[in-house]
Image (tube, rainbow, N blue to C red; front, side):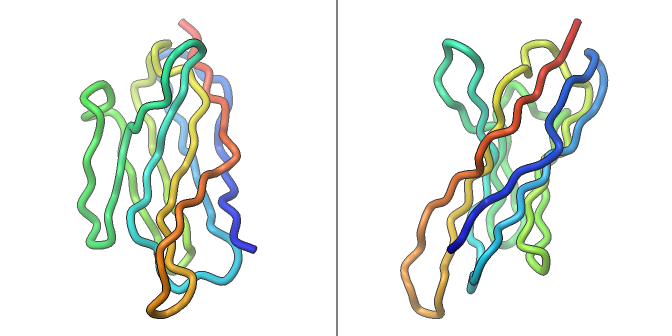
Length: 121
């Protein structure tokens, strides 16, 4: 069974850094688009970064220049490096992966369990 397992959340002071990791476990043929979303209390879930198979990435305006998404296909892992963190970045962060489990098969969407990131002022 395929699962996405996140790690790396925590409490950090404003201006600090955190790195989130998300590993896809199980039998996977390939990973397509990989994304990080976040949801703050009382707000809708929003996508903060996305990276596609060829390595091209895009970011929400609110995190451009501060967050970097990357992927390691050999390790079935996606990362989110978060620098210059602000209190407004406080949220639960979720990884999202579009995976193909078998050659020629359809793609499926998976979500991580969520990681709390809290930025204190």
